[in-house]
Amino acid sequence: MSAQILDGKKIAELVRSEWKARADKLAQSGIKPGLAVIIVGNNAASAIYVRNKIKACSDIGIYSEVHSFPEHATQDEVLDCIQSLNENSHIHGILVQLPLPAHFENNCVITSIASEKDVDGFHLYNVGALVTGNTVFSPCTPYGVMVMLERNHIPIEGQHGVVVGRSNIVGKPMAFMLLEQGATVTICTSKTADLSQFTRSADILVVATGKPRMITAKMVKPGAVVVDVGINRLPDGRLCGDVDFESVKEVASYITPVPGGVGPMTITMLLCNTILAAERAQASVKQF
Image (tube, rainbow, N blue to C red):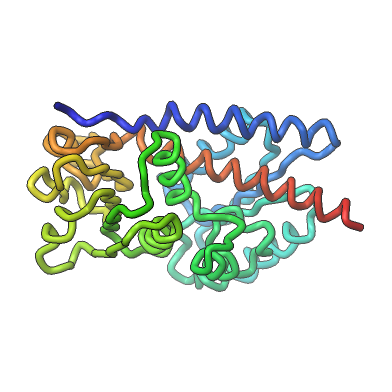
């Protein structure tokens, strides 16, 4: 029997409708959540991502603005822009679209964003808080995965979660979020020796390596929940994930498709974090 599909698009629509109600409530108080996006260079994929984020903001009632810089822009120019946005009370969230050009120091740029406006969840403050279970803004992709599991009533506590991938954006925070919910967690990479011995023990398998279809059916425990975070373009132009969907869906109990799985959730959680930032800003003002 084929796995049930974890439909990220459908879940995202439900979550957005709930958070739109919160944005509308803020609007009644004269506050419109605001997101500023900074993009440097001419990366075609980044430009598409930014357009999608701006459209999503418009759909849910979030004000947005884009600050574009040429490839040869200096880091100081971008830092000056971020400082101005940090001081702008109408902007509640700041996002720097990655990747940045090679002459930028990613950590320097990201940590220049005020932690209370770090809606991507990449600031060292939020990363450290994630480790202790007290984060304010969770990184959007793993946050979206957790919401997908929750909305499908998939148990986490007591389960063995295996995360394949160790990036700061997905792999590491994903592991900490599963751990916080009571899972026993193993972190692997694409270089892990005999990877299948770990993936076959997973009740919940999350894959984020950027290697097309590297996880096959024989590497998956029957009945496992499989979350594919990868998105890769094949030579023929088609998109696929890091999981061989067609074979694995015959083994897993739940599986995310690519596209239409985790992707819609990532943008949705960015919107949620931006609205939350606006709510926190409003509460902070009320205290004084």
